[in-house]
Every structure is written in structure tokens, then in C-alpha cells.
Length: 93
Image 1 (cartoon, one colour):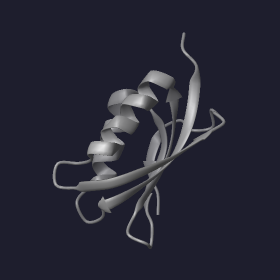
Image 2 (cartoon, one colour; image 1 turned 30 degrees about the vertical axis):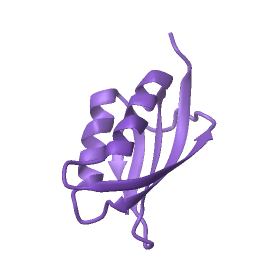
Image 3 (cartoon, one colour; image 1 turned 120 degrees about the vertical axis):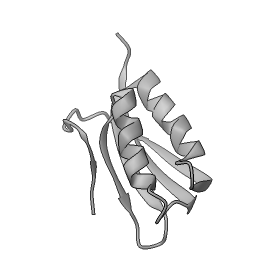
């Protein structure tokens, strides 16, 4: 069994108003990743994702590409300590 990890992401580009959060939630479900995603006032999208390392890595790779009508300019990552406190992946506000 692989290690469980957590990562905080800030995603910049054309990521608001293009269903980025919904697609992020769907992608997290596909990879078995839990946590949350939300829009920020500065136009970026923020997410916290937890799961097995290879699943979180795949989720991060998707975030670098983004939803079909989005355009990702930059993804800033900060690796965190895995907490195990999330049971699903939510869109928060």
C-alpha cells in the first residue's frame, strides 16, 4: 500500500466561470481523492486534496491541464500533512 499525502493547490489562469470546480470535483472522484475546491476573490481556484500519493499526483497533473474550456497558467503546490479528515471531495464557498 502506498503512502497517503495531502497537497494545497492554488490554480491561476482562466479558471473561474468555466466549470473548473465541477470538473475538479469529478476528477477527484475518478482518482479517489478527497478534500475540497473553491474560487478565491483574486480569480484563482484553491484546493486541498488528500489520498494515496499516486492518485494525488494524477489529480495534480489534471489540475495543471484543467477543464476543457479553462486555461491554466500556473499551479502552486504546498505539500501538507495527511489528516484523513475528509470523507469526500466538496465544492466549498
